[in-house]
Length: 161
Image 1 (cartoon, rainbow, N blue to C red):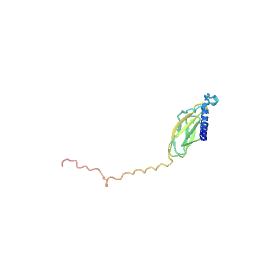
Image 2 (image 1 turned 45 degrees about the vertical axis):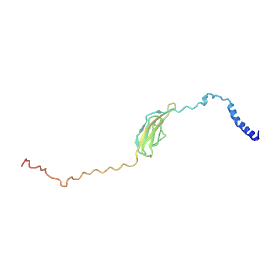
Image 3 (image 1 turned 60 degrees about the vertical axis):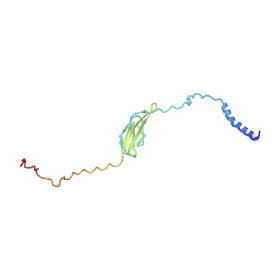
Image 4 (image 1 turned 135 degrees about the vertical axis):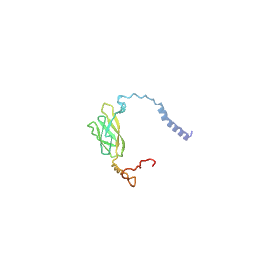
């Protein structure tokens, strides 16, 4: 056998040795997880609730109140809600956004109870001033060039004269 063949045989044996050793290892069955390795509980699905947004529409700068649960936390792309919820309602101000309809969401969660979530729609009105009223329609002009005066003449009244 030549040195080249011997070197190739050695490389082949060394390449296959780890695979053979790995295949010969004993597999173990996983143990049950203990209380310390328990996966966290999944987040519960929020309970849907009806909410009210007052007023239902407004221009930028309008004050808005959302209510429906306690303590509320409001979110919307159109309304900037305060973090103060001491009154049990979410108070906010309409942002300077493009006129249109926007979703308002109210979240409520008290420890020990299921979270609650409600949705409503708020309409942002445009800030442009309304168009001026159309001018009043003037009364139509005279229909004939000369307006008749006096009683209408109907003729003599005799037939066949």
